[in-house]
Amino acid sequence: MNVQTESLTPSLTPGIDLGQVDSLFSIRNLRVFIPGGYGAIGEAISVAMARLGAEVCVAGPSLDKAEALAERVVATGGRAHGFALDARKEQSIFAATAEAIGRMGGIDVLVNCVGIQREQTILEVTPETFDEVYATNLRSAMFLGQAVARDQIARGQGGRQIHLLSVRSQLALRGRGYSAYCATKGALVMLVKQHAMELAPHNITVNGVAPTFIQSDRIRPHLDRPAFKNFILERNPLGRIGEPIEVVGQIITFAAAAGSYMTGQVVYIDGGVTASQ
Image (tube, rainbow, N blue to C red; front, side, top):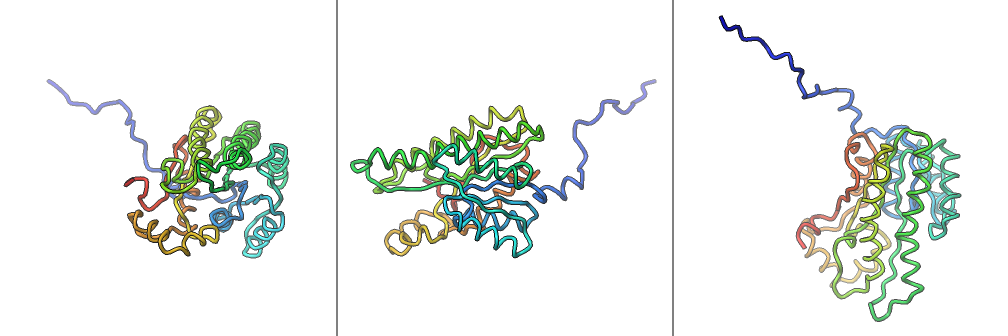
């Protein structure tokens, strides 16, 4: 007589851990270093992450601006510190990273918001300007990643590194002088991928977030020109300019448990621009 028995092979499908579900997007008590953190997007990231329970260190070339933002965060109940950083100089990067480690006891998450644009057409680009953009946008990312990785590897608890890029890492711009900016942001994509591969054995993920034009004082001169504003809106499938807070969600995803299996990736936050050009 044939008797049908249940398979003794255990299921490969894990059960749903409700505790993990509840903490998917939690960043409470993470120690976050945010170079360039007092710009429009950086400020939104700094305020939001502190509001959600992270401790943040904001650094940039203006000590007054960094300290003022940290004070505003603290006034709303968050934990924040502000200090100076010249991202064009590796010794300043190492010193600022050491200060962040000293203030917080370590760095769990790097959110690199450093970046500049100096618009010059191909016939006008000077070596000095190109080198300034390169040092600020790309070289600084190399040594910020290195400095933070040394701390994360030494502590042996893994970590996250997140770099702010731009849609100009994928798309050129007609009629404008973006050689240095596009070149450095495009190279940063590959730096993200290479750092991700080298740091993966240490359970450190490295990813990028690439916005298009986002509402800020920095782009106001462009938006005040009706022809340029209309050009931007017409080519954006969602038909509007993004808000700084709309960049924050992906930063939090990469920093939290929700992003634990993503590395070497760049997410474009652009209203659909890169999907349609």
